[in-house]
Each structure stands twice: as C-alpha cells, then as structure tokens.
Length: 111
Image 1 (cartoon, rainbow, N blue to C red):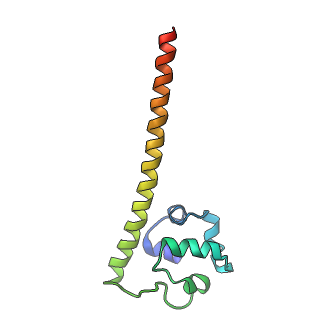
Image 2 (spheres, rainbow, N blue to C red):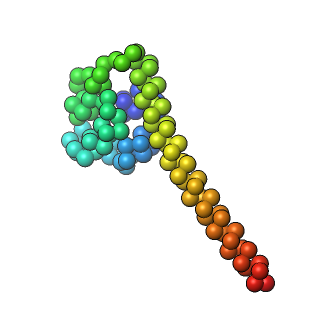
Image 3 (spheres, rainbow, N blue to C red):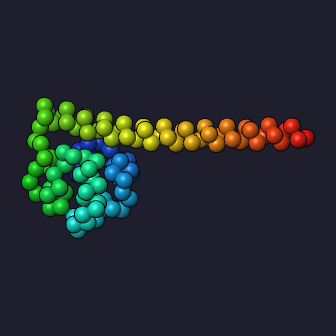
C-alpha cells in the first residue's frame, strides 16, 4: 500500500495497471510469485525483495534524477496505460452505438 500511495494512484487503478485483482494486493507479502511478477513487470523500478518483506530499498534504482521526478514518471506511465484502456472502451462503445443505429434504421425502413 505504501508504494501505491507513493506513486499517487488509487488501489483500483494500481491493480488494473498490474493486471491483478484489488484483493491480490493484500496477499503480496505471502509470497505469491505470479502477483509479485505482474506488479514488478508493471513497475520495473519496484524492488521485489522489498515487496515481499517491506525491508530495504523500495526501488531498485534509488534515484534517476530525483525522487519527485521518478514518482511523476511512474505515475505518468500508469496513467498512459489507464488512458489506453479507456480509449479501447470508448472504441467498443462507439461500435455498439453504430450497430444500434444500423438496427434502428432497418427497423424504421421496415415500418
């Protein structure tokens, strides 16, 4: 939870960005490797040992330029992923609307 607050995301956005369920976040310390792998894949700077134990450095790379810059960069990467997901949802909804309009046109023509 500390890392999620550190990068400034909600628990649900963090879980989504990692491809895991929100409840999985609370089981990381039990050593579930698949969950740890997904989180570390989504956030490569996150130290897996810290994720398991809460000890040591939270990030693999202490600082690229500054703590503030690394937090912003991590948050931006995740926001980009969330925006892409939203874009996909919007495209699907637009397709549904288009299909609905076609069906309405056919129904009107048949009247």
